[in-house]
Length: 323
Image 1 (cartoon, rainbow, N blue to C red):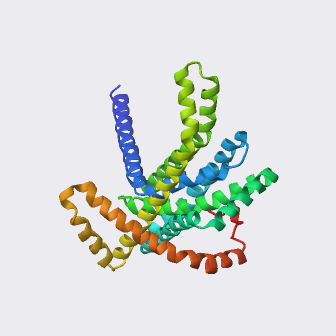
Image 2 (cartoon, helix red, strand yellow; image 1 turned 90 degrees about the horizontal axis):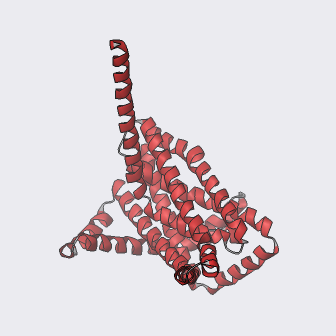
Image 3 (tube, rainbow, N blue to C red; image 1 turned 180 degrees about the vertical axis):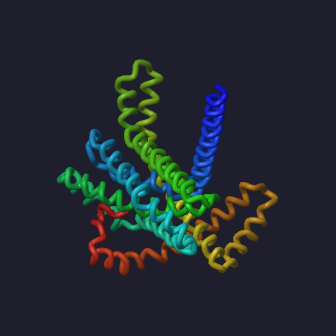
């Protein structure tokens, strides 16, 4: 009996340690995941456009296909690469972060340029006509394009999470990366699924609601969704520029160039009297302006240098599947 009690006591101790480890993994994953806010918001803001123009019954299957590809990107390809980097080439993490930050800056600036350029709107109209003409082929292209875009955003997200983890154990890192990657994917594509079906839910409530109040809510959802999507896109763009700029500034400091970070910190301290939020806002605005400036400089580089090279090696997509 004493031996059995001792065994049960050991099992309880092991279970307690395991539970603590799980809590630590989840805590580290959650803390690190918040660092990737800009890329996550961008992911959620961008994905709904890939179901635009398709029949309502195809919206959730398309989102599911993209989510499944995102999980594969994060867990099968990027997680092992991230662990190899942390184990054998930790010096490469800051430059890779800066590369991802530059990509976010480019994407944010390209979205703004897209709004200001009438040529882009003409292309969008042609794409919508093509969707109507060949929906099955376009669905496959859209999904492939979305998964390619997700790979880049996922690489940025996983690198940011990796840099924010405060543990050395490789298995702990792997678990935290996996939890954070899956959690972010579920949050992003779960939100996207809700967003793309919200207008259908609102329409059903408006036409089938049992009470006047319910029907009014349904009409409000239908009317409000276009504005909400525009707001989400705006927030995503601002987040990309802010996070991209801050990654570049912080990465430059890690690589020995501290002047930009010091200047931004000094500017933020000028608003210290107005409170912590004001200091954060000053830094975010400056980082965002720097991100926008760099992104605008990168647009011609991508269009006339990188895009032709990618097309030459077979990695460039059609305009309608480009992010």
